[in-house]
Every structure is written in structure tokens, then in C-alpha cells.
Image (cartoon, rainbow, N blue to C red; front, side):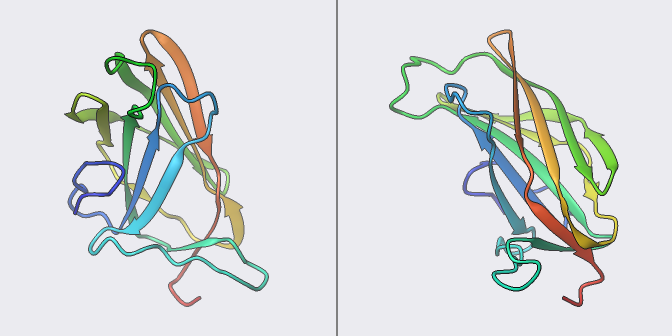
Length: 159
């Protein structure tokens, strides 16, 4: 399966996929993100009401693949894709921090993609908790930090 924003195939064995993207010209530090079920691309369950409204639900013990795409918009002032590298990817959840290594994937005139070389595994936490993801990129030699932190609940599958 290929994500609509990542243009990268999901690594084998992943239960979930997190596709991240950013525009090298953007001035914000926010990452665009898309959670999906790795097998069919459907969305990850999200509470729309009640005490956990806005939280994404994941199952403990399941794994997540992470892809990152730097995508220049067609209306940007850039005439070509800058030299982009991902220096670090860090995921923190429930006071547990994990660093993921990435490798370069597909590259085109206006995009370059990266994929984590290992899967992230969810550990149970029944309370809402921010899933903090930070990406440190080098864009033409300049370090830039992107992040996002939606709240998630990791349970036993009975929500």
C-alpha cells in the first residue's frame, strides 16, 4: 500500500502507518500527518465525543511504520528541490522515548521520501497521552525541526 502523502510503500509487518510530510519552504514547524491501518489504508479510529474526544486509538503490542516526505509545492519560489536529509526522528509516548533511523526512498523533481528502517511498537496506556513526534531535517545545510503531538490511547483493542 502507498500513502497518498508519502509516496512510499509500507514496510512488511506493520499494523499501522504514520505518513508525515512537510514543505521545505514552509515557515511553520508543523508536520502534516496521516495515520492509517497498514493492510487496507483505512483511517485509525478516533474518538469524536466523550471524555477521550479527539484521541486516536491504537492497540498495545501492534507496530507502526513511519514514512516522511518533503514535498515542495508547485507555487513555491524554489526552482528545484533543495538538498534534504533527515537527521533524526524521535517518538515519545507515555514517558518512553524512541529514536528511529531512516533511509532515503523515492525522489522526484519536487519531492523526496524517507522511511524508518524499523517499526515503532505501541506500549499500553489507558489514559490519553500525547504521541510526540519530532523530525530534524537538514535543508541545504540548515537544520529545521518539525513536530506534532496528537493525543492517543493505547489499549487492548476493546474501546
